[in-house]
Each structure stands twice: as C-alpha cells, then as structure tokens.
Image 1 (cartoon, rainbow, N blue to C red):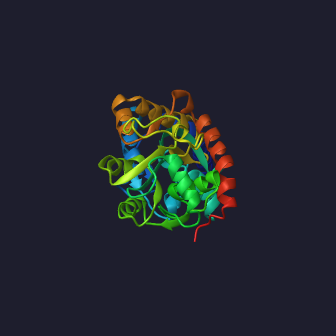
Image 2: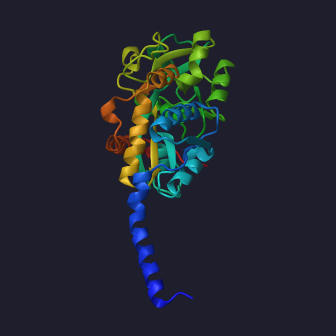
Image 3: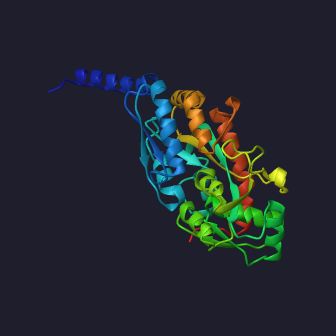
Length: 328
C-alpha cells in the first residue's frame, strides 16, 4: 500500500503535469493526424476545396490532414460535430457562407455560428453566375430583368433547397429588381442545371463548377457573374456591374474554423499551414480553375475571418428573416 507521503507526492506530480499539459500540448502540436470535417458529401465542389487545402497543409504541420465528410441539414450536422469536438486542434471544420452565416438565420441550431468557433483563415470564394434556359427570350441581363418584371410571380427559379446559396441569391435578386420569382427546390445544384437544360425552370443562381461547362456547350445561357471581376475560366461572361445590376455581389465563401477554446498557439499553427497552402502555385491554379476567387494575404488572418463573418451576418440575416426563410 502507498504511504500517505508517497500518495501526496504522486498527487502533487499529477497536478503539476495537468498544469503543464496545455502549453506542452500546444508546443508539441500536432503529434497525430488532424481531421478536417467537410459538412457536405464527397465529390462536390466544397469537398474538392477541402481536399486540396488539406493536402497543402500537411507538409507544414508534418502530419496527415484527413478529410471526413458529414453531410446533411445544409451542412449543419458536420458543423455541429466541429462545434462540440474537443478544442485541441485535432478536429477542424471547413465552413462556408451557408454553414457559418445563413444557417444561423434559417435553422434552430444546437450551436452558435459565431460564439462556438475559433476562426482560422478564409480560403477562397466562388461568385454566383446568373444563368437561364437556352430558350429564354433574353440575351443579356438587362433584358432578363425586364422579362422577370413582365412575368413577376410567374417565372421559375431552380434552387438547391431552402436556404441554399442558390435560393438566397434569388431572394436578393427579387428584392433588388422588385419582381416576384417562384422558387423550385431540387436536391442540389446538379439537378437544378439538368432542370434548366430541360426547360423545367427559367433561371438559376449557379456556382462556376456547376454551370461553366454547360454555358460553354450552349445548353444554358449565362447573364452575369456576381462579382467585381470576370471569371478567369470564363472571361466572356460580364460582371453584374457591366451587365446592368451594379453592386449585386454574391458569393459562396469558404473558411476554416476550430472549436471554441482551441489554444491560440494551435490556431496560429493551423493558420500558418492554411496560408502556406494558399501560396502554393499549384493549389492556387487548381482553385482558380474551379472558379474560385482567392483572398489577398492581409485577409487570411483569424481576426480578418472573424470580422468578415460578422459583416456577412449583418448584411444577410435581415434579408433572410424579412423573407421569412425557415427550414421545414
């Protein structure tokens, strides 16, 4: 049996070890693989971004970054797992404008999109492309707006479900031009584009990865890119400023987050790994080829991401709530 003296010495050593565990863990981090949760199914545009960034972070961290796909409920299931994970840097999440802005106004979440995460870094943003069926009687954005006004309440827009980027952008478009548009939900942007090609709907707000091949093939029409600059991969599509809807900038951005309480030193290491990955020419070329816009270096800090997310919430939540958009 342990004597009382030996027991007290052991207890004191345990206490000292517990005190030192935090700093030592941060200094030694990472000592095992890091899991990046992508809150959407494998094979989609967001998953592709997660995998290329994960690959680029591995050399800096010196450990594998393993992508885990957890889809469902507009990304909220996977995002919840990040929010409730142990804040030790071994679980991080790939978030976007849906998971970390729009869902907070649409769903009754079990976590707070702001308070339950530590921002790591912005990654990239993909502008939306306003597209229409090939037989639509409009050849440019001004003509499209005129047609939508003449057919207010009758025109059909395909969306990827309630609260999706495609859905929200159409609401913003209605508000901007003063015309009613009927929203037709589909199970993802792929089926939306198929419906557009078949003439089942009139227009959609698509992402470059989903629409550019069909635009180039002439099976659907592209009216404008909702960004200040034209797409590198599709320079013939005008911006909204050029096409007649000045300032109608809409994008789906992507960023990395960790659970609340993750040590600052670990956030710094994760940020450095993400920034290094984004500086890799091959990774940059891959993202640009997929229709992504890259953020400048001074916008890649955790503080910049926190401020960016807050601005997005301040801009988008009032419109979402005014439109009465709620999950069913």
